Length: 503
Image (cartoon, rainbow, N blue to C red; front, side):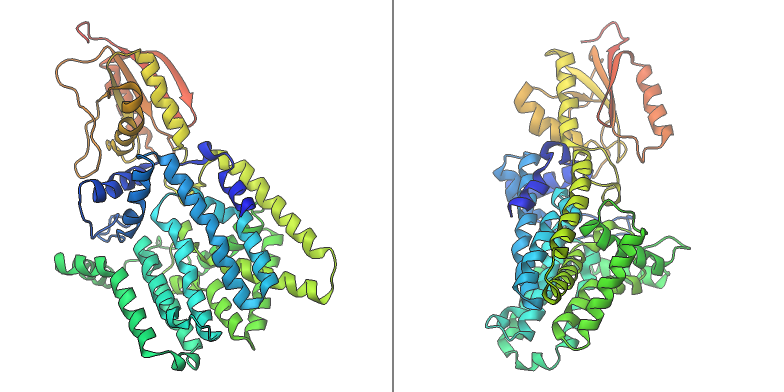
């Protein structure tokens, strides 16, 4: 646990990411509790296709924001600790599959995993999939091991799949995983009591209840949308992409980002280890049900591939733990056969490769594969705000900002109200206005202009140059540049109004 916390809290301030999704979730999650605004729909699915995730993530996150008085750093710390606590879950599952030694090594590899470290930074709905998805396999193992807790097995399996689906609609594929596991355990499930089936059914129904209520409220809009998308040949991948190559790449990423983080996906070392561990798990699964469960786990992405695949990094969430257990089992088998220093050397190598990657990446926060806009570090955003107020020197000022989403002030509306208002006592005037339908609102220009103005640009990755140029040209009509500087990935221009009657 100590090692896990060191890995997850290294460069804590610099690694805390706060982009549009985080700001939106901060507004929406607190709105549930502060204004009693009950929500049955969560954030929209990527791609603007008319589908929504579940709101459970907001219900979980809201009290955490309120506990820390809206401070994103406190929420980020909470999610890092929750991710680290996954060590206990990993140990229990690995112990049931292959014994205590495998459990200890698996927990250690989870603690140093670069992938899990990245998920711990990610304050967003997919990150909790790392906790909920493994519950499916724990439930299956309780059935096979005839545990005294097996009455909870179906609740864990289908409740875990339902909770994961609440986090991200794409995780619904885990219901297919749960059904496949029950097929493998068809002899054992005969011993489950009726109450276990009833508990599993109603717990799943309860967790999915927001989806069900939304369908009734909106006249089965999502069901109709899905049918329409499938009928039109909609796919989550771009035309011409191979879902088989995508699966191969995703599979190798599981090995790279959990134990060999400094190596490329297609490097010889990653490919060889992936082949060896896969062959080992397949071989063990011939005679052992526990390894059949593990085999389904590490190859569960195949179900997504059958559905057409998905390029999102988060689709690997939770699967890496199965890979970690497979690697640990292989190492313990070697150690039992020929006790040598081989296993400690290998583990030290894994610590080195992951540690180097964590030390190099954490100050830059989340990797590009996980987010749509890099560089939105909370520490830099606070520095930008402080710089504005220092230059304004107690005077009112106007901000024109170019960012993603364009002409949406959600991120800065949250940060100015949560951080700047208590510290400096007033808010700026926001020049861009606000697109309807997005949370957050700052004062807009009334008559005339402030003498002090700023042109702020967010990190430009994904920003069309035409928008950057357009905003600069527009601002040039109102002000002239006095100084400019780069703060992390942000560009900030301190300007003076050209209007002689400014305030």
